[in-house]
Length: 265
Image (tube, rainbow, N blue to C red; front, side, top):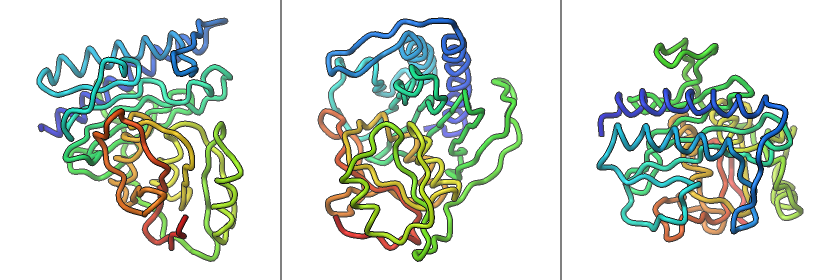
């Protein structure tokens, strides 16, 4: 894989999709439908999916592509593929809370190795460079020219005073019980894959997810976190979270800075 080309294409497509998403977001009204799994989908999800799918297929015609909006046509075949969630945080989008993201990633050998997470309403964009180091690019963003980049790295976690980030939309008692095993200084809530990015920048130390997610929800954020020195493991046995699973469903997981002394389930 030509990582220089990949990162350039992923970044450009994320920005293009983000522009279209914001056009719809800022409109007076937009269409919302319900998918077969009862989850919502908007015209922004579909528009962003079309932009990203067309761009990736054109640039990398021989690479398997998995996207949330075309999931019904996918089956796991191999451990190397491109994976996309064109609009993660649809509920945040519908409720106009801003915590939604565009997510594009490359999985190689079952691991997300390059990815971009773009939060257009927040004006924040995180991605892995070709060399694998994760960065945050400062806006305003130009598709044709890369702006100032800041290398990001996970915190040097203080286990006596951890910063924890959890979901805005999927918080439950089991999550709170697990968080209660740690000495927590403060809590943050965030939507979509931004939680991975907050751990990647050192704004949080720990993100436990005790709920259903799919690989397209996590791959780009996982790549960004890995490129910042962090890790993502299964909740049940603390083994690395891998990709290319049948059905693309994830187990519960924990994303964290390696300095965190993880507690068992």
